[in-house]
Length: 130
Image (cartoon, rainbow, N blue to C red; front, side):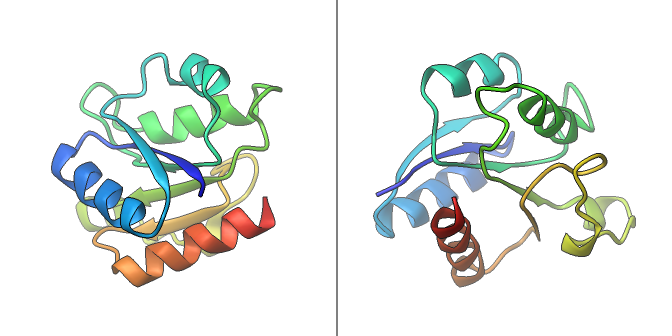
């Protein structure tokens, strides 16, 4: 069983993801903002983070948090999946092939809405590699 933190301002989606991951045998926690998350991650380190990009207080909050995670020695190797609707809301057309340590420092990228089996496969894959 892995500990997974879901960080998304869409509480309904976060609850759905949490339910799906719990049914797959994982322990979950959720946050609806990025404030204070780095300290929380260091205190109670999960095995994986599922992170949204856009937050009401900061449209690029997920990117900023991912960069902060990578720049924090105690959690810099924490696996992060970006799960976002950014390509639907802003036609940027980026995907997992665009991931690089400087611009998008995450292990994987998925677009909302994501099929449950696709998300679970990515989670399992990252947990095996971690």
